[in-house]
Every structure is written in C-alpha cells, then in structure tokens.
Image (tube, rainbow over all chains, first blue to last red; front, side, top):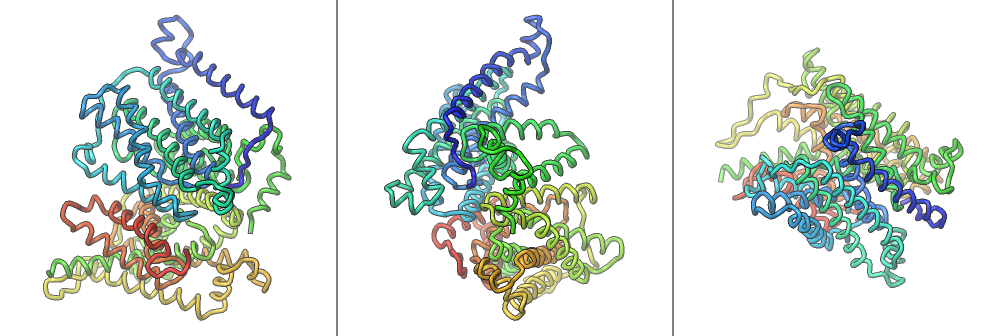
Length: 341
Length: 289
C-alpha cells in the first residue's frame, strides 16, 4: 500500500476540527431537509426526502469504506468479502425483527455480533492467504454466503425479507451518522494504539512484524472482526431503513468494489481518506444515477474516473491536504513514473 | 447409472468452456501478475463479434473464431499498452481497481452499441447431438470442448516452442533480468495481454453458441476463471486444463447432490475454491504459491 500514515500534529488537529464541524453542520441542517419538520417550523425547505436518502447513503458508505480501510488499508489485506458482513448484519436484523418479533433496537445490537463471529470463523483460515489469493477467497465467501441465503426458506429465499416499515427519515439518518462517527473514531483510536502499529507493521512486512513480536494471526483476525462488526452494524441499520432485503441489495459484489474504491480514491490507510472518498464518490454516483442511457454514460464516466484516479493519484486525494504533496503536473508525472512499465 | 454418465459428460463439456475462458486469464495473471477483472467483458466482446457475423453475414460461429481472436488481440494489445501498463508496478489492489474500471467501460459501451437485449447464435445444427445409448452429447458443446483443447495446445506451443513465448516466460520469471537481456518489456506486456484477450474472444465465440448473451453476461465468467486458475494452479497450461475440467465436473455433480440445486452452483464452486486455497494453495498442478 502506497498510502502513508499522517503524522503532522497540525494535520491531526485540523482533521479533528473538520470532523466535529462536519458532524455539527449535519446535525443542525438535517432536520431542515425533512419536509415535515421544515413545514412545521415554517422554515424554508432546503431540499426533499431524496436528499435525505442520499445523506443517509453517504453516511452508510462512510461506515463501509472506513471499515474496509481497517482490514484493507491499515492491515494490507484487500478483502472483497466485506459485503458478506453487510449482508449478514442485514439478515440478522431482518430475521430477528420480522420472524422473531424482536424490537429493532435489540436486533440491531445482534447484527455486529453475528458479522464479527462470522469474520472470526472464516478469518482464521483465510487470513493465512495473501495478495490475490486472499482477495479471491474473500470474494468467494461473499458470493457463496449470498447464494446460500438466497436458497434458504426461513431467510425468505429468493423473495427476500420484508420488515415492518418505519417512517422516520431522521432516525435512520442519525443512526447511520452515528455508525459513521463510530467507524471514524474506531480507526482514529486504532491508529494511536499498539494494536494499530502492529497492523501497520503487518502491512509493511508480515515477516518483520512477526520477528519483532507482533502476534500476526491475532492482530489480523482482530482487525477483520472489527471491520466486520462495523460493516454488520451498517447492514443492520440498512435492513430496517430499506425495510426490504434480498441477495441483490445486501450481497452485491459491486458494493464491495465501491467501498474499496472510496477508501483508495480518498486515501487508504488514513483516518479521513476513506471518509472523503465515500462522501465524494457516493455523491457522484447518486447524482449521475439516472434512468435510460444517462445511466450508461454515468457508468462510463465512473469507469474513466476510476482509471484516472488509479493511474494518476494512487495515494488518494488525501495526499494533497495537510502539506504532504501539492497537486501539480510534476506530482502527476512522478506518480505515473513510479508505477509504469 | 446412465444418468451419472450423462452428468459427467455434461460436466466435462462445461469444463471445456471454463478451460477456454481461463486460459487467457491464467496467462495474464501468471505473467503480468494482474487479476484482470475485465476478462469477462473481453469474453463477451468476442461473443458479440460472433453474433454480429452470424446474424448479418451468416458466417458459421466456429468459422468466426479466428476473427474474434484477431480483433481481441488488437484490442487487448492497445488496452495494455495504453492503459494498464501505467500501473503495472503498483500494488495489486490498483490493477484490480483499474481493470474493474475497464470492465465498467467495456460493458457500458456494449450496452450502448448492442442494447441490453438477449442475443443468441443458432446455427442449423445447434439442436442436434451425438446419441450413445441413453447418453446425449450435443454437437455444439463437443465442438466447444475441442476448440478449448486446441486453444490449450496453441498456448502451450506459443509459450514453449517460439521465441516470443520464451520472452513472455522470461518476463514472467524476472522482469529486470528480462529487460537486461534486451526484451522490450512494454511490448511483451502488451503482447501477453493481447494473447490473453484473444483467447477470451474465442471463448466468447464458443459461449455465444449455447447461451444467450447480454452485455453483462461476462461477469460470472471472470469469477469462474478465477476459480479455475486457483483450482488448477498458476503457471502451467496443463494446470488450467485440469482445473477447468474439474471445475465443470464439480459444478454439475454438486448441483445434482441431494438437497442442493442449480441455485447453489456458485456456492458449491466457491466452497471448493476456498477449501483448495486453504488446504493446497498451489492448486492441483500449480507451480507457484
């Protein structure tokens, strides 16, 4: 992984202030974006429910990209199976709420637990693999879990699961926002502990890390489980928010690619990189997502954007902030030369 | 019993398709160290070329295979030379993402050109088959298997009996050393990817004869190619052949197991895949870990 860990104290202070300001702005402005609240208060309508949906989606991808960053960015294990944790979290809530009649709040607590347990079980054998092999194996797990869920009767099989509809944009927005803040905070804390240094050591050289006394298996599995728990939490919230889940909407491999893309474009291995990537890319994707041929052009645009980002700014856009690099022709030429044949 | 034999034959025929799909994928992975997520899209480009030639000029699908190969050789060469060579020394995640982007662009372009409608190639002999007792072997699938094995032979010959092949293997073994002895890395990278794409195109031509094609029909084939290479092992043509045939057998026989059905095709395949990775990461016949 090319991305570096940021060390500048000023940069740190700035990032904390930035997070706080963003969160505050969200919380203050959020109610204004709800039609009902705005009308009651007689305030000018900022936007409509669509915007609310987008904001919640943005928060969701902040969770997913940050969680992926813990295993992919910090530990250096490119997981293509994180979507399995999302799906398992979603189905945990789905089954408990709609089949067992649990209250949503209680079921939501079970979602990260299920996802983390699953990560523990598959992580112990799979984290022995490296590079492409780990990527492929996790991809396989993601596809396989989705397909099994799709074929098991009590889980709704291919029809999917319906949950009782809860109409409250605000609740789900705040839940997702809370999960996003939790994911950011978790990454921030990890990077400041012995555990985090161990993960970075594994990323740089697993043999060297083992030699200096890092219990690599434990560290890797723990990072995998933390990522899984956060992803499962987002899945659980999504299940109730969307009130309908099936294989296609919670086990989509393309979602997994999107979270990786967000983390990498933003800057993998940093606290705020994945956040920036998730916000920017989700907004782009949601704005471009239209019907008909517009959707096709947006896909082409996304593909080209992806190629340009990967080729020219492999360290992510976060590299331009905090005085590490400046966006210039020389920078682009240099990154290009570093990786070209 | 005859049902079991029929299943085995169907499995091997399906395996032949997987061999054809995986040969190019395995070559690109082994030599360039790129897991090409656009492989399935290249397969479908080949399928559309065959469909176009069949529908508009009534050219037999098997005769259009060389056209597929040539067209994809050019496309693949240009793609590697112009785009993918730019990240060839970056960490693997970047080549993953780049090829995913390429996949997105190719699929979208196909959608624009050919629309999302289902297209199929139906030559006059597509319904008939060889009858051996109670076992039926569709001619078209038999032709596919034959072409797949022919492709494997061609690839083996290129790699082991030509100067170009020697250069490709040298680059795969050690880039810097290959450059030192005067091999033009950029050209060999592009040529390797081009050959991989050409094989994908031929595989697409075969696929169009027994399956309706849409622009997105290629994605599952990328995953299957993955699985085949892992199952067989990386770095040998014979390993890809063994992996492909084994994978086809596992898929067909697994589906007929009690309690499972066609809905579990991918799950069975990937459980096997993960088991192979954990128990024998080199694959059945592979050289590299």
